[in-house]
Length: 288
Ligand code: CLR
Image (tube, rainbow, N blue to C red):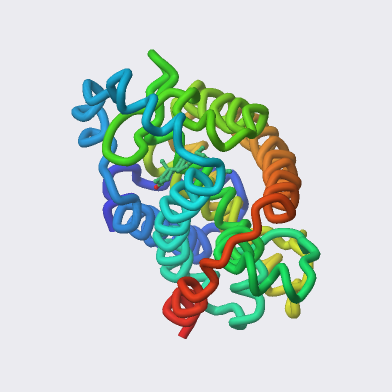
């Protein structure tokens, strides 16, 4: 167990009073969350660092800005769906998550109930599925976004190059984009390690306050263990003060997601799409 090897546990400073057996479990839990994060994070941080010089040209930016609103929404939705799939894969390999019922797994991956009429569900199922069903995992995508973000020039890795907020102009939701970029900026300021990001992502996902849970107490137990894991890692890194800041970030995430939902409702009323044939298979693929 590499975590144990690098940072031997000292029972004399047992911060949680869990010694002897539970701490082994926490170490194992952390190790598998970190492994799962590493395997599903698409790019390593060093790879992203090396790509930072790749920026969109003026012409390329203009081409994105000249896209129609629904073209650009669809384009982003496809990118986001892709990212969400990796988050679902990440979730599936978290020990506490795997043990939950399928209903609760889905309930954790989505957030809040966005009310759609039947017709909207059919017309907008690309959005219905990407956002309604998977928006709990959207929070994790936003956490992950900080790895793909360059604070020096406020750009994010999107479509193979680094892009500033102006590239999303045709989405016509500048306030949401600004809020998303601010969030990424704030996350970067915490300078989290990959292990801390992994544990924080798991904590964002396994949240016993989500609506529609069948076995809330089981989710609570899973949440507690991930929380202990995160505290353990922060303690080991001598950064306990981060815990408080991370809880603040979680609150910001919640508000971002409701802003996102609002935009989506607005968008689905204005630009009904007919791309519904595309996404039901994705749903089956993710959860069968
Ligand atoms: C996040 C981390 C993932 C890879 C990834 C894929 C798509 C990116 C996303 C990251 C960050 C946010 C992103 C998104 C595509 C569009 C979206 C750049 C890097 C922007 C913010 C536009 C969102 C618009 C809707 C919310 C309306 O592993």
